[in-house]
Image (cartoon, rainbow, N blue to C red; front, side, top):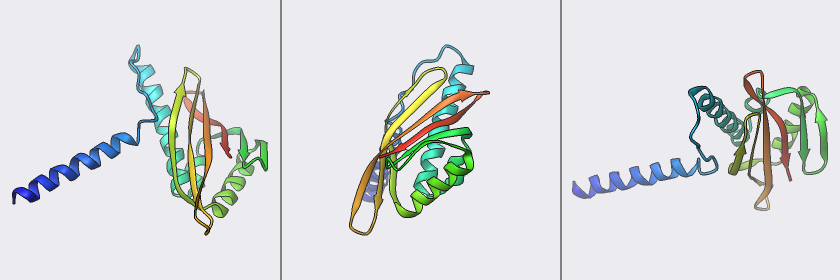
Length: 153
């Protein structure tokens, strides 16, 4: 019985540590007021929702944050400003071909109207896992964070 309790407690701490490690890419700061705190909480949530879209290969979770145009740099082949519909098709084709194993952020930076996160897009093409550098930048407009640029190289 004691071993089972000790094992349960150990597993709890390992899982809790891994959950916190997932957010090492985001450095919380002290905010001057609740409005600013809420703004950056929304920024973090936006980044997490985009990562979830990549991890589940669900482009609809990503395109929810497209503005009137988005800059894409996808393996240096698709490079430029695209309409939301074009960007959705490009990302969908990309994720169909480069099946994701994981998408994780490593670092982030944010200011009042701009934020970006850097990470890795790990995929499997049948000959083993490979990775691409990933960067997502957001801009704050009309009280929401929208995707300014996505780069996967």
